[in-house]
Each structure stands twice: as structure tokens, then as C-alpha cells.
Length: 432
Ligand SMILES: Cc1cc2nc3c(=O)[nH]c(=O)nc-3n(C[C@H](O)[C@H](O)[C@H](O)COP(=O)(O)OP(=O)(O)OC[C@H]3O[C@@H](n4cnc5c(N)ncnc54)[C@H](O)[C@@H]3O)c2cc1C
Image (cartoon, rainbow, N blue to C red; front, side, top):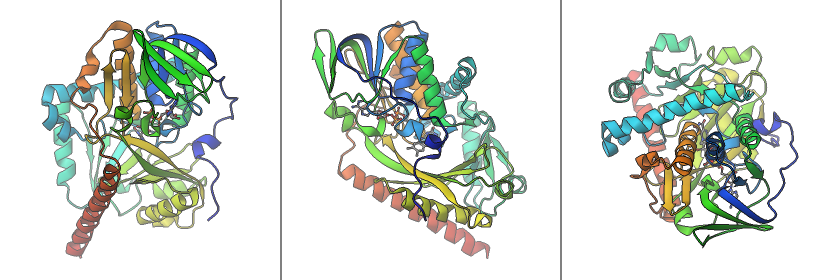
């Protein structure tokens, strides 16, 4: 298989000249480190609240990390499931956190419209398709979402699902109607431009190399600049800033993979007659969605290492064939990987970790809406002294136990994958 050059997302946006690097001595009110969704949402939230003197440092270019490479699913909730949230926090608190992510989806819609961000938005919801025959998993999640989170997820019976996804792979599904999907790199660029138009200064090619206390504020250095700021926000995801050991030690960078097929024309409708994005009920699930030019974007798997585009394409093509064998022979035009950041507790780490030092990281594989929520909470805290970020206090900095955490994460993945394969085999054997 030929080596796909760049991600589909990179290939479908114009090359932009890099923004200027940070240089010299700079005074700022807020210095944000990291130009992914977490950093940019904080910057934009601050600008929308009228805060001036906001400077953002990005080591590469905005959207270089997970935010510019992800599956593009914009849906409610966190990497940690809702049942676990309920167990950890009780109903009122868990419901408030979950509601934060659905109002984040509303914020995303408002920003797309208000700032005129052209990001191939498909307002078609998300299907959670049942890989197994057992309907209990869907029914109990549907009931839990309705009863404790006020969310109306619709059950899609097998016959109806077959009319949407032309495969015998799934039995039934749950439909999350409020969700959407989009081109994440176009959206990243859109919110970066919106922040800039309101006075935020963005520097690219400007890695922060050190962080130290300086009077009542903080000093951040890059290779060519020294920034003094009253507040610093660390938002570096799985690409670890290397500025503060206890921050980096508390997350595991975990890779996941994505590919995009050639444009399929009418063949796309042989596979799916819905514009919804789809993921399935396995621990190691596939996730996919139709693209506006009739390609199929397909993602899945997690690993402790990034792989070459050719290896990613090979692995994911095999996964695609398990669901849509009728697409045999389709060409894979793009394949890539990206790093997610996971905390042991699978929840984002959001809030103040020292006087004037703020953190937004560990969004895992479920970060588009939660990074928007985090940006709003941190902007509200810095601009207005709002303390709502404390809703995340239960999920603080806990050691990710590296390097054992990495081995543990890989072992857990294999174990859950084997458990799912066993369940699948048993169901098929008993239905013969
Ligand atoms: C392949 C893939 C698919 C995914 N699919 C989905 C999905 O469909 N839906 C969903 O909700 N979530 C998804 N996620 C998760 C989601 O993309 C992330 O949770 C989210 O983008 C994290 O944003 P972030 O800003 O924390 O990190 P990132 O986007 O990774 O940004 C961190 C940035 O910090 C910069 N940086 C690092 N160190 C420094 C430094 N020292 N100085 C300056 N800059 C620095 C990096 O260059 C990078 O640009 C996916 C993730 C991946 C990898």
C-alpha cells in the first residue's frame, strides 16, 4: 500500500504562513501554553469576556495535536462513562458536569454560526451501534441517560438500523440526536482566528521551555522570548509540555488511528444511508462518519505507540472489512495517528493547581465538547473569579505511574479487546 502523505484534514485546508514566533521580553495578563482546543477555547473565552493581554504559545502550529486530527465527533459526556460519574459524584454533581458538555455543544454551534466558521458541520447526530446481540447494554444506558441525565437517546431497532447501516454486524443502536460532526482542523483554525480578531496574540513555532514563579506571577521562556504573566494556563494534551513534572506525570499519552478512503461516490450509500457519525459498543470501538466529498473517515484502536501511515492504513482497512465487506478494494488515501492524554481516572484535569497557574488536560478520546467546557470554566475563573471549575476537583493530578502506566494501559486494552472477542464468538456460536 502506498504511503499516504498527510491527514485528510491537512490536505483539505490551505497552507497558511506560520504566525510569528514569540520574541524578546513580553508582559501579558494571561499566557496560555498549547494551541489545541483546550488552549484556544480558553483564549477565546477570555477574549469574549473582554480580557486583554492574552498571549498563546504553540510549539508547532495551531491544531498540530489531537485537536486537528481527531474523528470530528462532537458529542456529550467524557471518556469516563456516565454510570461511573454517577457512582463517583452522586446525581446532582454528575448531572451538572454532563450538562456542561451538552451546553458546550451549544457553544460550538453558536461559535460556528456567530464567527462564520466553515467547518463542514454535519448536524446529523451520532449512533452508538451494538456490536453484540445482547440488547441489555443499550437499554440500560438509555434508561440511565434519561433518568439521571435528562438525555433523550433514541433506541433504533435492528430493522431500522439495517436501513441506515448496510451491514449485518450490528444488532441495534442508540441515537444521540443533539450531537454533530465536523472538520476539526477547520474549526480549530476558525476559533483561533476568532480569538485573534478580539486581540489574542498567537505565536506558532514557539515551544515554552521553562516555567518559574516570578513575583506574584509566572515567567515562561521560549527559545527567543521571556513572557511574564499574572496567569499561566497549561493546555498541552498528550504532547506534554515538559514544564512541570507533576503535570506531565499525571497523564499518559495514548495513540489512536484514523484513515480516509478515496471518494466513494454512490458506493458510500452501499455502506451507509445516514449522515450520522457511528461508533460501537466494544471497549476498542470503531468510529466512522461520511465526509462531504463521499469519502468514509474511519478510526479506531488505541496503542501506546504511533504507527506509520502505511501500518495505520493496513490495520484500519482490516477493521473496515469486518463491518463493510462490500467496500472491498477501496483505496485508502490518507492515514494518520494522534496522541490523546489520559489520566488514571479517565476524567479531564481542569482548574487551578497553584496561585495563578491553571491546567486543562487529560481529555482522552472524548475531548471536543469537554475542552470547550474547560475553556469556558477557566476563562470564567480568570476573568470573573467564577469557581465552577471546582466541579472537576474530584479528578485531580494523580500519578499515571509511568512507565508501568503505559504497560498497564496496553495490557488493559488487550484484555478488554480479548473479552469483547470472546463475547462476540460466544454469541455467534450460540446463535448458529
Ligand atoms: C485520532 C484522534 C481521534 C479523536 N477523536 C475524537 C472525536 O471524534 N471526538 C472527541 O470528542 N474527541 C476525540 N479525540 C480527543 C480530542 O481530539 C482531544 O481530547 C482534544 O483535541 C484535546 O485537546 P487539547 O487541546 O487538550 O490537546 P491537543 O489538541 O493535543 O493540543 C496540545 C497542543 O499543545 C502543544 N504543545 C505541547 N507542548 C508545548 C509546549 N511546551 N509549548 C507550546 N505548545 C506545546 C502541542 O503542539 C499541541 O498543539 C480524538 C483524539 C485523537 C488523537
